[in-house]
Image (cartoon, rainbow, N blue to C red; front, side, top):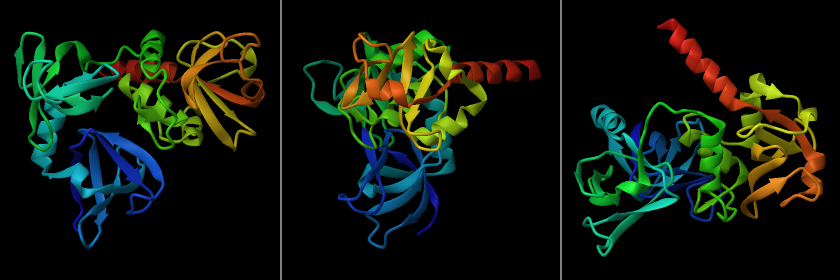
Length: 287
């Protein structure tokens, strides 16, 4: 029953509305994400947790490990690489012939323990050690936060099946796609589409402009108070969104992925990259 901190120790932890596998999937957390414990079931098989984005729900105890403040700090400081491939196999030995221990999803952060040629050795939160191919990793640097980097990340999700509550290329919903793509590029957005709209009001642009910049976020719904879909612009009238699967969409009749329905439901457009750049510039000015 005690409050505390947890780290996700499996590839992907499902976060559910109630402490049951049959309960609604609210969202997901990749390996290494910090969770705050709110309470635990009496049999200690489920934890009610809060995610870094403020979202809350129930996770199975087998998907997390408790950590002290010092252990949490050590993980945060050490996890200086993230998976840049759609997914990356953690292998027992530095060889493609070696047994796969688990698959890590795009955006998962890990520490580097050692290197051997084109392989990097890492340790997971539960102390499991294994090897990752260097080509599927990138150092976590100060994000460039460019339209091209956002679009590049979004395209890595192409073809992913639609999954309500999903957040990875293994399955995602529309707002999970947007949140994960921007998170990979160093921009924190809320989990749900309506909250993403509220969080980006200060960087809204004119919907009537028609053509939008790559990296803009497009919001669709019957009204501004009833946003039901969200997408990432790839420039012009085109965008990437999760609708059945992650695919290309367009607001221009005759273009690939054109949807008459969505063209009528566009309600707002935001430019989070500009807001993020202003925040960075503001911090630089305070130094």
